[in-house]
Every structure is written in C-alpha cells, then in structure tokens.
Amino acid sequence: MVLSDICIETDRLILRVPQIEDFDRYAQMLADEAATRYIGGSAPRAAAWRRFLQMPGAWLLQGFGMFSVLEKASGLWMGQIGPWKPDGWPGNEIGYAFHPDAWGQGYALEAGVASIDWAFEHLGWDSIVHCIAPANAASIALAQRFGSRHIGPAQMPAPYQDSPTEMWGQSRSEWLARSNLRRDG
Image (tube, rainbow, N blue to C red):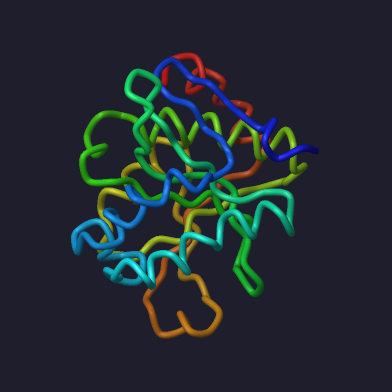
C-alpha cells in the first residue's frame, strides 16, 4: 500500500493521509479551547507540531490512522477522522476532531461514514468504538448518528486513566445492516 495513493472522495470532501500543508489549520484547532476541551486541552504551536506527527507516524507504522479531511470546494483542512488504535487502547477506534469553522455543516458525519466504510473494508476490523468524554454531547450525538450504541465506561491507558471516558460502538454486521446511512448520510 502506497500511502499517497490512499484517498477517499465524498460529495463535498476529500479524505487522505495527513500532509505537511495541513499543519497550520491543525495548530489553529489545537489552539482553540472549545475545540480541544475533550481531547486533552489546547496546545501551543510547538506542542501541536508534536501531536500532529502522531497521525503520519501511525499511517507509516500501522498502515492506518486518522484521515485529514479537506473541503473539496476550497481545499481547506477541516479536521481529522478515522481509524485510531494507540497501544493499550480499549478498541479499534474511529476518532474525530474538527476545526471550529467546520462545525455544524455535516462534515463529520459525511467523513465518518466514509472512514468507517474504509476501516471495515481495508482493515478487516470486526467492530469499532468511539471513546468519548461523558460531557461531550456533540461527539455522543455523532456516534449515535453513526448507529453506535453506548457500551459503557472505558478503561483508558496512561496518561488518560483518570479521564472519565464512555465507549460507544458497533459491530461490522450492525454497520453493514445500516446501508441506508451510507446512501442518505
């Protein structure tokens, strides 16, 4: 698999492996307290750089990671979404984080459907989870729109072991039974 060849197109979006030109918008997102409230808090640009490198590293070493999500019309980086499985993680996660100016436009749902399809097809996963802070109503609502159900509390690895986390998820067969989600978005 050549990483530069991995690209998914939806009606309005392009999902691809992160590239260096995505960093400025990523750093903007990580500087925003509202955008990072449930993903470890805001970070200055230098710390954002180190966090940014996680996804290209995951792609290189594991063969998957979250996709960069670009708006087709503008080419603007909107966020990241997709398969994510750090060491010690409680399941095969479809994670997501979006820049505040992408909120409320349906981009996360559109990109999420494409990335879940990709994960089940290319990674052979039997199930997916979303690890969500209990107070993160927007992420819970998105997980429910994907058809995920509440599984219960998640035990996260260090250094996240003290962060309250709820797990939402579904099996491959549950996802495939909801083919209308992929048609209707």
